[in-house]
Image 1 (cartoon, one colour):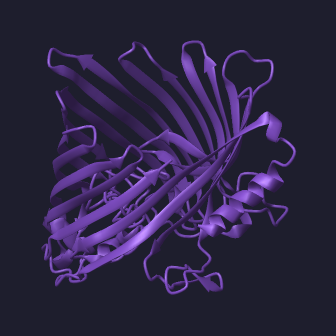
Image 2 (spheres, helix red, strand yellow):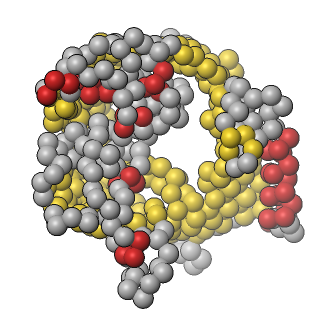
Image 3 (cartoon, rainbow, N blue to C red):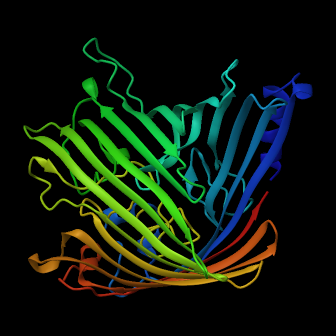
Length: 460
C-alpha cells in the first residue's frame, strides 16, 4: 500500500500542482480480496479465455487459492463541474505466493512481496463544451466504454461525446482498439482497428427506457500482412488477427417495469444484428450475417425477485465457407454463470467472458431467485441450461450441442455499509458437448464441474 500512496502523492503533487484552490479532489477505491475455495477442474479456471485448449480433466484436478485485486483512482474536478480528470491504477489479480516472472521482476505475491504488478486502468479527461447550456461533454483517453453489455463493455482508448438531441441522450464515439503504425507508402489510414459508435437513449415513461445503437468497426492490416482467418479461435472482434474486415452492428436494448398489486413485473431486452465482410490471406471473401436476441422476464414480490433469462447467439457450423454466421462480441464481461462466465468472484479466471462459446453461438436459459433477507443479508439460487447454437465437434467423429445443467447459489453479507463478505458455488451436470473441452475426447462427457469462490470487498 505504500507504493499506492507514493504514486497517488506524485500524481497529486506534480499533475495538479498550483490548482488546488480551483479543483476538488476525490480518492476512490475497490479493494477486493478473493478466494477460490475449491474447484475439481483447475484447468478450466487457470486463466482467461481457457476454452481455446482442453482444460477439463477426466480424473479431475483439485485446486484452491487466494488473490487480491485492488483498484484506486483519483478524480480532480473543477469547482463548477465543467472539467474532470480521472486516473486509476490497479493491482492484481495476484495470487498469494505468486512468484511468476514479469518484466525482470515478479508479480510480488511471494516472499517479500515486491514486484512489478501495477497497471493503468483508466486515464481520461472529461469536460463540458463551454457556452452550451445543455449537457455536451467530451471524454478523451482510456475510458470506461459501453456499447451494449453483449457487444462491447470494457475500458478502451478513444474520444466519446455525451450530449442531448431532443428527447434522446446521445453518445458518439471514435475508439481505437489496436494501432498499426504505417511503415510503407502503400499503407493508408485504415490499418488500425477503429470503431465508430452512434447511440441514442430514450425514456418514454418513468418506468421504461430504450436505446438504439449503430457500431461500425474496420481494419486493414496493410504492410503488416494478412493472416489466415480461423473462426474457432477468433470468435471475438478483439481476437481477430491481421485480417481485413468491415463489421457493422445494429441493435436496440431497454427495459420496462410494470407496477402490480404485489410488487412489480419487468422486462429487459437486447436485439442485435451484425453484418459486413472479412478477407484474409486466402482467396475466400466472407460475408458476415449474425445476430443475438436476449430477454429477462421477472417479478418483484416482497423481498424476493424471480427472473427468467434467455438469449440466443447465432453460431457457425462451417468455418471454411464464405459465410460468417457466428455472433462476435468485441470485449465484454458476462457474469451470468459461475461455471462458464465471470459469475465466480475471481472474475479474472473464467471459462469465457463472451456470451457465446467459440464460434458456435449459445442458447442460454436461467431461472434465478434472489431474496434480500435484511439490509445486510442477501441470498439467491439459480438453475441454468446451456447448449451451443451449432454443434461442437466431440470425440469419435460425433457432434453435440448440449453443454449441461448448472445449479448456482450465493450468500452476501454486509459487514459494514461499504464492506461485503460473499460466497457462491456452482455445479455443472455436464452434457456430452463438454467432451469438446476435455483432455480425453471419447464422445461423451467424462466429468461434472464444481466451483466455489468467495470475497471480502471494501469499496469507498
